Image (cartoon, rainbow, N blue to C red; front, side, top):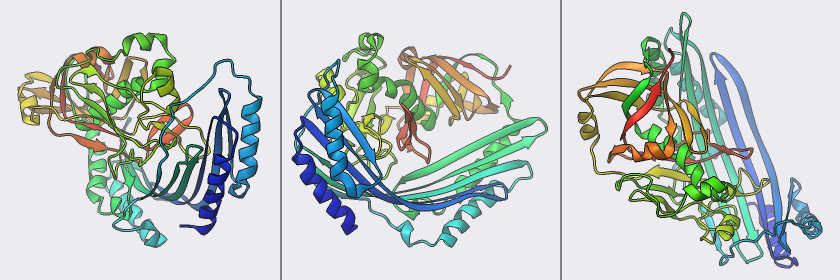
Length: 462
């Protein structure tokens, strides 16, 4: 551990405990990073650097003060400045938070191979070898290959007496090929990342081969005719669906600040079949959404959002937990120490159901198998997702390949239309992440098993 950072953190702990406030916290971080980005045959970007920063957040007489800074040696000055700001705010609506027992602990990410011990030449050679595979077809117009690692030392201290240190290492790659045949242009992308070492990105040649093959195969795929189908969604699409369409609706600020959602998101209300369980769990090590504690010093927990088809819980920061008279869930997260924590997901997934994938496919006489996801958007309970690709299903067997598969509808109706849930849960997470209120990409994970959903409004290019 850096002695300078440790000494500053010790000073900060003394400072925050001595401030005349209702609640206060200081977050300090020092980090180093490297990124290598290739495009086609070109090197787009190589960056490496070090940075440090911090923030002070203080609650006094129902008003919040927040100050962020780069000069971590002046933490006492910024703490007093933040207290002065909070003292001068005449809040129209008084804020308060759930209090918690102090946490004193140190957390370390274990690695099989520390990326700090790997030379730049070796890192460049690895991502370049993946880029060569992405370029390996004559149909490829261009590629994008990105390597990134981040090594961060993070201190969290608050007026309750919490003193937490986190030594975290994060590493990942993102791979994309863009295929072209005449006027048809077809991209495909995959990414993998997590908390750990260089082992996360080594030996990912199969992933690169999958990317280029899928992009080329999609050049010959047909667009799915619009209609209403029985749809089998794969594990990645079920995960993105639960994250985007339902997970955000489960965030405490989204509910408390919207009167309509308050009436809909009532605990105990049925939202799906008995086999449906939706969970957010920040304790799963290795995944991008893993957090040993949130950015408010709360330890995460396994939270059932849906249990046996019924709304069971929601995600909270200290403040939304207080407003809704519910316990905090360790969901107060910030993109970095210089931003304020807001309610965010971690690892969100649909739990395994009772069916095998074979049973799910055998049950469909005519339908669509939607695989992977390109993107989508949500507007409260309405959603639109574009699947990466898919297949026609006839009498339980896969048929022709489809592209441009767009799934849309009402999330609550769609959840009630879930007919079968598989037993093959798989989790995903890449170098991208979740965005909210200008904070992104925040590392998260999502996943689920294969699922069969009836009467899905589905379409493609006409």
